[in-house]
Amino acid sequence: MSYLLQYARRPDSIAPRPKCGVRVDEHTRLNRPGLYGDAFVGVFVEDTTHGRRRQPQIDLQIADCTNVIRLEFSLAHARLRENSLFKIDTLLGALQRFRDALAAEADLAARRD
Image (cartoon, rainbow, N blue to C red):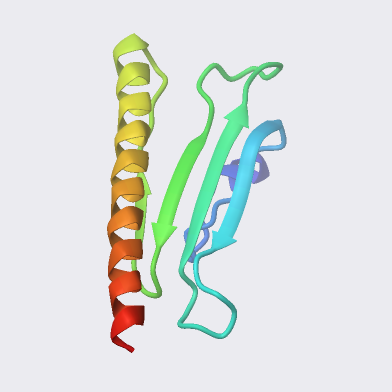
């Protein structure tokens, strides 16, 4: 049964990773040191090039100080692969537009000070 531990979820939502290859495995804090809490983004994509598994483990987590969201991405068949890439491209586009708007408002706030 100990082999199942690699798939178990810990209470802090950070799962142990498989021992196979990894394309990306990052856990990045979103706040500067000393500001707020433990906001982070966590990304993991398994590399199945030489593995026995056909479907990679894929995990995207975004957290503020109290809430965590996990987005599901599947590569099981062509339509889901297309949708997974559409989903991440849509998210990246929304984040870039949000960043642009935030920067514009930051400039206005700085001029007001």
